[in-house]
Every structure is written in C-alpha cells, then in structure tokens.
Length: 202
Length: 202
Image (tube, rainbow over all chains, first blue to last red; front, side, top):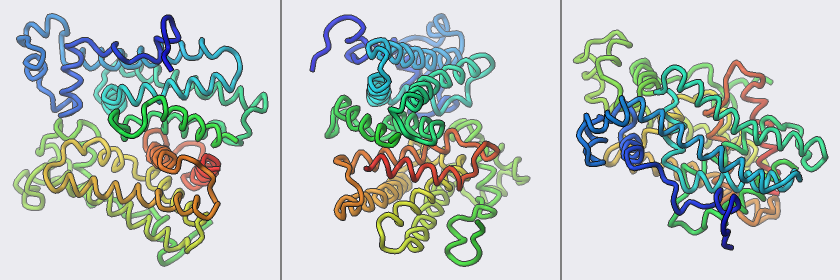
C-alpha cells in the first residue's frame, strides 16, 4: 500500500532521509571499528575531505558521535510523534502505529540504532544525559499507551512495566537480525510484531 | 526458593562462575572503551601483570576477545542444555525453563552479553564463524521448542519464526536495561517474561 504525501507518508518513508554524508561516513566507521577504534583521518578520507576540512564542520570525533545519536533519536522520535498523530485517540490504533514505527525504524536504520545503543558509553557530559533522556522519552511513549490500554481494559497484562520494556527491546532488537533483502518487508514484519506484542499484553 | 545441588542448582546459580581474572579485566576494559579502544597495557595493569606477563597467557588482544565470547557462549549454552534436561519432554516446561535460563543469564551477565553482541565485528576468521554458529544454536533451541509447541497445539502463533526471534531478542535485551539492584529479582523477572512470551505465542 502506497502512502502518498504529508505526515502519513513521512514517518513510513525511508527512501531518503539518511544522515548527511559526513555523518554517514563517521557512522560507517563507528559500525566497523567502534567509536574509540575510529581514526578521524579515516572518516575524512571516506568523505573525500582533509582532516582540517572535516574539523571545519565537526570540531572533534566526539562532535560527530553526538550529531549521529542526535540525528538518530530526533528521527525516531519525530517519526513516532507523527505515527501517534496519525493514530488519533484510540489506544489500539496508537499501539499498532507506534509498534509499526519502531519496527520500520529499526529495520531501515539498523546502523544508527546499533551506534545509538552501543556507544552511549562514549558520550560525554550533557550529550550523554540528553541521549539517555531521549531514550527514556521513547520508552515512556510505549509505557503510556500500555498504561492507558490497561486502564480502559484493552490490555489485560498484570506487568505493564516489564511488558513495555520487553516490547521496546523486541522492536529495537529488529536492528540486530533483520535484513532488508530477507523474506519479509519491514511492513510485513511490523504487522507480525504488532500481533505478537498485542498478544503478549492479553 | 533455594535450588540445592546438582544440575538443578548449576544453571540457576550465578554466585560464582564469573570469568577468570584476566578475562574479567579485559571484559571490563572492552565494556568501557570498546575492543578497539582498549590498550593491552590497560588490561595488564588492571590485573596487576606486565604486558609480557599477560601475553604469556593470551598472545594478543584478539585472543582475549575470543576467550571472552567463547566463555560467554559456552556458559549460556551449557546452562540452557541443563535447563532443558531438567525440563524433560513437555513443551510448556521446556519453554518455561529456557526463557528462565535466558532471562537469568542476561540479567546476571549483562557485560558478557553486551560484548558478545557488540564485538562480533572484531572477531576474525574462524572465531567469528564459531561465535555466529553458537548464537545460531542458541536461537535454534528456541525455534525448535516453538515449532514443537505449534505442532502439538500448545502454541497457536502463525509466525513461529518471527515470534522466536522476537522472544530471543526480548530476553537478550534484558542485559540492556535490567539492574540487579532494581525492583525485581532475576527470578521474578523470568516469571513475568515467561508469561509475556507464552501469551505472545497464543
């Protein structure tokens, strides 16, 4: 099913919106060698710049990492908010579109998700606390829908807190195993995950 | 409930069985700085050895990483096999104890799990393919129980393959968020995860 135009299209569309070239080059290096294992001259060479040329845009390797995780979390949170805006007030719809949004993001943006999860340790100062706050905000979106669903009787789980953590990690875990050239499209996988997750909350 | 003696105790017991000191020192460094960001002299200093002294036991940083991931996967797979031996033939029991085993391991051994998952990229040659084979074996244990449960009508899911991946990633994801000083013991969490996972398969 094609989604054309406006916010409906936007949060499901991954045909563009990849990180800009310098961030993408740094992301590729971090995925291959880790943040600490990446030399700034490797990033510069990959994007066809001198080291001073790269530093003109990003003053340090840390600045590149910060920009990557900010890009990732902003992209994810913006898409989730658009998904919830499309869903409207019914808790089942909100849950379904939020799961779809999480699955699509982690299927399409597995490299961003991997670095945003594994290199929290390398974020310093405010960047670290901001990143953790963004992840908490993401988790709370799911918490709130599950709590609302329990309140109206849509979900029967006695463990809304652990259920929410389990469901978020199963969706973010898509980044660990899903391959875009595999048997299912991200959209098909999202439908199956929605079914599994709803049943888990029964 | 105390588990005393024999295989029953063994797979649930995390009071000892941590990696030996040199591996633990390397693990701590890898968790903090990543494999590529770790200097062998930092590992040696942490365990009170000279660099040649450490190299006497492990000839390279790579050898330390290989030993860590082998330790992790052997420990996990041994515990899972003991859990299944305890469970006997009934599919519901096999599923319950395997989920318990996965949750306990990832709650107690989050550092091992993090490095075994995030540093696959740093494993070279045969060590890499052996590690991937061990992870596949782990996944297949869950696949086989879910398939058997579907065959006998214990589980109703139409998506046994994706359900198994989702359940394994939700259990391994415990390593990402669970804290031993949190509200639930690993055993209490395991009971909740078993309930969630069984319902997901309904």
